[in-house]
Amino acid sequence: MPRDLRMSRMLHVLIHMDRHVRLATSEQISKMISTNPVVVRRMMGGLRDRGIVASEKGHGGGWTLARPLTEIMLRDVYEAVGAPPLFNIGPNADPSDCLVEKAVDAQLDASLREAEARLLAQFSKIRVEDLAADYESLSAEEQEIAHPISVAANMHTRDGA
Amino acid sequence: MPRDLRMSRMLHVLIHMDRHVRLATSEQISKMISTNPVVVRRMMGGLRDRGIVASEKGHGGGWTLARPLTEIMLRDVYEAVGAPPLFNIGPNADPSDCLVEKAVDAQLDASLREAEARLLAQFSKIRVEDLAADYESLSAEEQEIAHPISVAANMHTRDGA
DNA sequence: AGACATGAAACTTGGAATGTTGCATAACCG
DNA sequence: CGGTTATGCAACATTCCAAGTTTCATGTCT
Image (cartoon, rainbow over all chains, first blue to last red; front, side, top):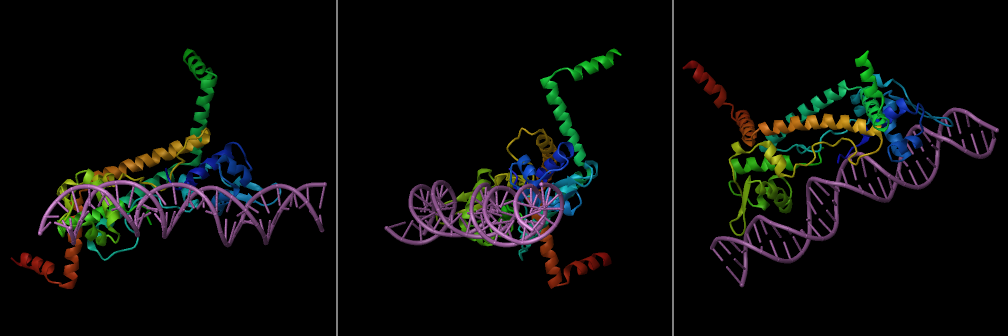
């Protein structure tokens, strides 16, 4: 549905790097997100410029995290991928002499700006680590389905103790 | 900047119709918003289906408002033009087996849904008439600049009386 | 009948993210 | 050194969708 997947893709990659592969080449990363290495380099380049990841050339090179996930906010990632337009709708960009259009555009602009500010504030509050934690909860749930032991057993143990 | 101008354009047209041209052909409307009649018919068709405007064929035909602007909310117009995606960013549409991606997408989806709900709630509260009133304020200001009389003079008159 | 309007289908255009190819540059390794 | 493996970068192709365009059918007034 959305046109721009960069932020989502980079979050995905950062968590994989933290939890699974400390050092990854663009080739490896491209397989995580079903694309190709050049696209990965384009996106990761922005993260590197922001000090979120580091790159090493040559044999044994690749990408590494430059900061812990606790110190990377969703907003940092959003901005690192170029802070693309959040909205798909909106008023015409080039201004007009028509006062009706000006009034419409002013109101629409105000509403969209407010929504944008709220969303970015939200992004400023969420650490990538929080998403990684969500992932591990999901992971634990899946284990539970496959081997329905630990949670119920532990709860019972605690209750009984 | 935005990709989808339909809502903005239709608001523009509705106010023009209410304040200036009770009956307008697609040809005339297309000139208001610098496009062509077919694009106008496509967009206005949605408004007609929602009972916002009415169309008449043949000689002397064209488009008219079917309700006063006080009874048309921004949200009605948004939905009438097809409720296009609000956001340009977001998670990948087709689901994945990767739990990391699921966790990322879930959080991103939640944030965007909340932002969408807020924005649509905003659109539900604003009447097209409110924008028309804004337009008339702008219009009055412009008169004031051209002929700096009425407002200051009236205020003085009132104060002095 | 003729002029004028909407209605609808099919096709073209334009812009942005994504995808692809090719080559330059840098670092390790034998 | 020369070969291998990696990033960096530029140029081009692909895809998607709103917008724009062309064409014809249908309906309505004079």
